[in-house]
Amino acid sequence: MTTSYLNAPDLAAEDYLLLGLATCFIKVDGEVFQVKVVEPIPSAALEALVKGIATSYELATATTLSAVLPENQPQLPPGFPPDAQFCDEFAFRAIAAARTYKSRPEAQAHVPLGTTKTDFNYSTERKRVLNSDRIVKPEDNVKQHAYTHQVL
Image (cartoon, rainbow, N blue to C red; front, side, top):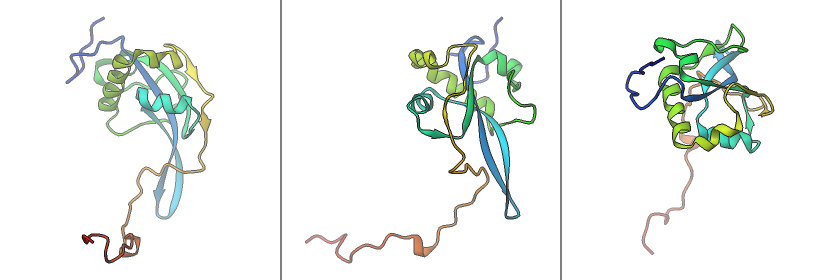
């Protein structure tokens, strides 16, 4: 089966892709709601997750591009909840993540193709709020000494 991906002639349908199920939050009218988000995990992020950093990923499934992007349309992988949402720019991010595993194939050994990893250091203590706005105020500026930028 030959599948071509827009702007990705270097990738094939059977190329490795790791998808994570993240617990994220959306803030609406002062209330915070939990959502499940499907997003590609690049090899560098996987290396950090394997070392035990706290993460919002409940699980990660190793699959192929053609399994989740047949005809460039996202498909929910088996084992993911039906109410899970795809992240913004899913196809673009999936192609980018697949490229990271082509350049670092040894990272695929952490989650072999067709398997699911669930033993991450899962935590929602630091909530991933998807639609948060950062408002910078003058009080946030770091105070510097008067002579910081002067030549002494």
